[in-house]
Image (cartoon, rainbow, N blue to C red; front, side):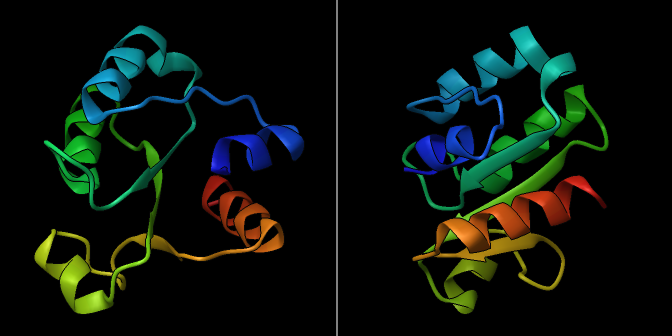
Length: 106
């Protein structure tokens, strides 16, 4: 859904079905990628762990985490909402557009 919404907003999007695939795409296209939009909770690797691996390759990579979990569960996954940009699910296309632009402009 986020991929379709972002494309509708005019963004170029690379999407992946797993953290492993996302890391492979990132290695191949890191110079073209300005923002990582990822869920926090995923199978095999959480979004924060994936983000750390990507920033080792490209320091300063911007990231917008999204999640439907509560803040206490997110903190247990390494994502403190006061330290990272977080988009709480469910979200509207307007909220997605605003938050993506906000993160890209920081």
